[in-house]
Image (cartoon, rainbow, N blue to C red; front, side):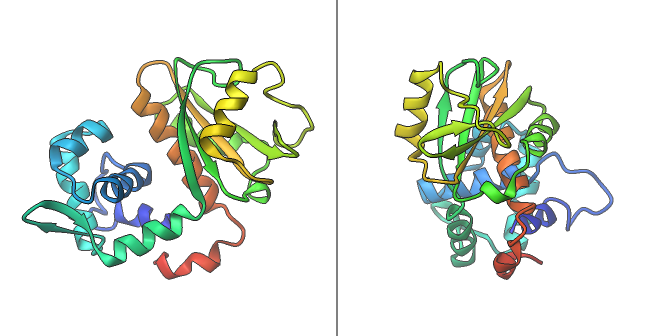
Length: 218
C-alpha cells in the first residue's frame, strides 16, 4: 500500500528528486474524497508545495490511473477510490491538538491507526519519519484499557492532561489496541499534519501483515 505511494513519487522521475512524498499523495486523496474535485490552487494551499511540484504530483497520479481530469476539475478514479478506502480502514480519524506536555510544539496534528499495537515498538520510527518531513518530531501513544500509554510501558501519558485526553477520545474515537501518532512543529500546522501522515504511513509500511494489502503494492 505505502510502497505504491512511494513508487508514484519516484517511478516516473528516477534520475531526479521530486519535492513531494507519500504524505502529500495521501492528503491529495483525502482532499479528493472530501471535495469530490480539487483545483491546482487548492492543492498548492493545502500541501504547501509550489505550482511545479503540484503539476508533477498530479501527472504521476494520472499515470498511475488514480485521478482523472474532468470539466469540473480533478477527481479520483474508481481505482483511486479503492486504494483510498483500503487505507482508510487503518488511518481512521485525525484531529488538531493544542500544545501540551505530550504534544510538544506550537502546532500538533493527531492521527489514529486502527488496531496497530503490534506494528510499533517505542515510537522511534514514527518520530524519525516526522523529523524527515521537517517537523520537530512525533509522539506515539497506545490506547489500552481506556488510557493513552507510552508504547512499551504502563505509564498513562495523559494522566495530567485531562482536556487533551477528552479531546482525543471525542475526536478520534479510539478502540483497544489503536495507536495515535501526534506530529508536531513550531512553525507551521501543515508541517505537523504532513509529519503525522508520514509517520502513520511509515507504520503501515512496517506492518508485518502488510501482504494482505498487496493488491495495491507494485
